[in-house]
Image (cartoon, rainbow, N blue to C red; front, side):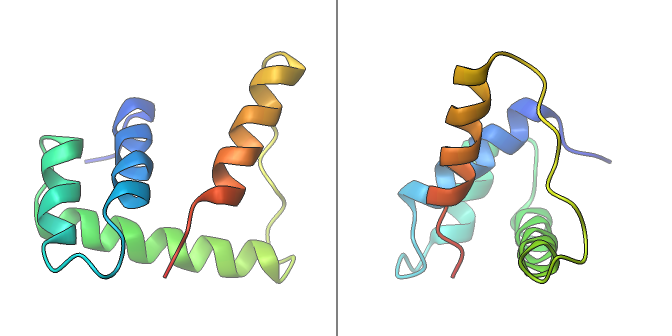
Amino acid sequence: MGWTREENRRFEDALAVHGPDDPNRWQHVANAVGGKSVQEVKMHYEILQEDVIRIERDQIPLPSYRGNERQIHNEQRRMRDLSLR
């Protein structure tokens, strides 16, 4: 099953709070997202990592955001500040 925008937001927020040094990171992330297993959040993270690599290599275009300039700036800043390790 896919991920909703709200689930993705909670996922990203949880990644920012529970870094790679947290021994229970994936359980915390799954709990924060709600309705997803540890395995599902790990898989979602792996897909996100692959997407970031492809974006950095200019293999896929950056998403086009709808909304006002402030919303666009906030979302772009949020993605830039998201630490993927």
